[in-house]
Amino acid sequence: MTDIWTDALAGLRPRLGAETYELWLRPLVLVTTGQGVLHLRAPSLFMKEWFENHYRDAVQQEIYAQTQEHYAIEVDVSEEGAPIADEAPAVVQTPAPAPSPSRRASAPVGLSERYRFGTFIQGASNELAASAARAVAEEPGRRFNPLFIYGGVGLGKTHLLHAVGHAVHEQRPDRRIVYLSAERFMNEFISAVRFNECDQFRKRYREDCDVLLIDDIQFIAGRDRTMDEFFHVFNALYEAGKQIMVTADRTPSDMQGMEERITSRLNWGLVADIKPPDLETRVAILRQKAEDERIAIADDVAVYLATLVRSNVRELEGALVRVSTFAALKGVPISQDFVREVLGDAAAPRAPQQLTVEAIQKAVAGYFSVRITDLKGQRRHKGVARPRMIAMYLSRELTGSSFPEIGLRFGGKDHSTVINACRRMAEMQTTDPELRTIIESLRAQLVGPQA
Ligand code: ADP
Ligand code: MG
Image (tube, rainbow, N blue to C red):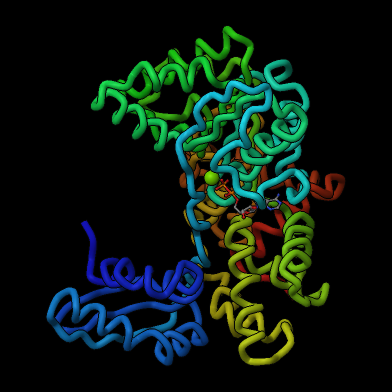
């Protein structure tokens, strides 16, 4: 189901172009519609004014053209700081190339030029995934097969997948590389069934393919026939020693509705996660991006920006582009104040007393890509035990709740468990700088950057 705002955007997008659309219109969200008023929310005052001065009329006209009704458009400014550009424009994909009789396979289709190893910044948060991807690119089919990379949105999964495609192609031009999203895989399969072209489909993915790169495999979970087809593709390639690399937003075992025989195969090789980048990595990414785009940004401003936008790389890049575009338009340099002005209340510190244990659990779960139920659960696995202790520690520090109360909110644990967790986190921070950084960045995320 769509709404008038979405419809209006869809109508305007071809006229305004993807870039304008991404930059100026998409950050605005629909709050309510009714009685001839469309109520939108902008992430900052700056965005609101820009919209009103440049695009409001066009949107009104578009709505009128679509509905024959006049709407007034009101824009307010988000309190929380709205998310900044949550998705990059989709990569344009075309079907896999027909097999070429020559030794040199044609260049891989659908890979974005920008997504290469050379432009991927490695840091603690993506170390394993990036190293494994490099190893796979060096020796496809030999080292980690399949390679499964998972993590939250905007953390570089697609980037690594493309980077492998480029690198294999450069080093071994005879290898046939097939890259596509799982969604596209499904659509092609459905159309192959419908038009009686299953033979061609099978040939393309099971035979004419040396390296299969599939993005967002979680998409096929619960789609029985597509899963079945993928299962056979996997087996054919795997048995022939061909490389398979897959990304997803969660681990194989966490994909609800995915057949067990697929989950287990996805676990055969290496499963590597990507976490949100730490501050140093975020700054390094910003510096590189600024250099690529010839954006002049002082070091302290880059650090400041990286402190404000922590959740993912895509948002970080979006924020840099937005800030630099505004700065260029206004003819001012990018200063800390200017960044704060453009990014709006996202930059404002939030009052600590409003914090709840739930908000902390949510932030910690998001940071580590674990589920809130795991934080509240009993599992002692390090992957959840440490986030749990950190969440307890921050709950005590930032909400001032009592130990028994915190225990209660963590699935009814005894207060002594909470006390132990807090004590251990306090001690470990003195010897473990990484832990200290994690806790600091979570604290900053929850209460705003500290002076
Ligand atoms: P995902 O597929 O995990 O949602 P993407 O691979 O699409 O994320 O990454 C989002 C954006 O962030 C892309 O523009 C990508 O180039 C950039 N990016 C992510 N991680 C890094 C990194 N470590 N170094 C440089 N750019 C990165
Ligand atoms: Mg992706």
